Length: 307
Image (cartoon, rainbow, N blue to C red; front, side, top):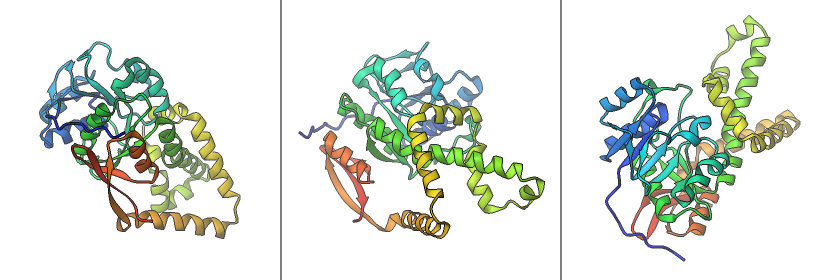
């Protein structure tokens, strides 16, 4: 059954962790006119956020966003004064473990999230209010997720300029293993193999090597926590890559080129849709490769790939 949700004034947003992702989200929401508050254990990050219009405080409510590393997620709210009625979401790159820790503690108040954005840079100096513009933002809709809270978290993502992809935590982790976590491992392997080939190889490295190894410039602790936190799906996705490498090379090159070319042309093949505020309908949108672009009173607007 569809569940109409009345339009209400946008609640404040509290961001815990004001590094690249949290700082960028806070800056984007300030630019969108939202009431943004935030906290970080680093005084320099707090000062930088305050200079961008964020109210720095330990008192948070409305929608509280956890923008901290995965190992710190479970204790991210310790020492903070958080409204017990607040909706809590996160930006973590793995969802099942976070759902098992933060989600277990907060129940239906928690909405797992993961914006597919970021660079190999980190820290508050890497803040960019346009970081999420046009990015896909996975937002978990579990059987126990309270739909009005999911919509509040979705509004935060939309106000930051992102497109929302409804998923379950398990679906998310399987998908990002293939398109994010394995690429980090492949980048590491490519860089290590080139390094063992000697200084001449590295001296001749150009665009393809740079593009293929860019993501492994990220903080090694971050990458390790990400792939180990999603070990099962990542191992399965890596096995699929290894199986692909066993194909005849012309066949492999042709197949990969076809997938990449189709992805590059996705913007020309979108069909606009309206989806009721219903868990099954929203998840069907995400599973079809679509996304939500606008929230209205009794439904959302979005798109699915044409055909």
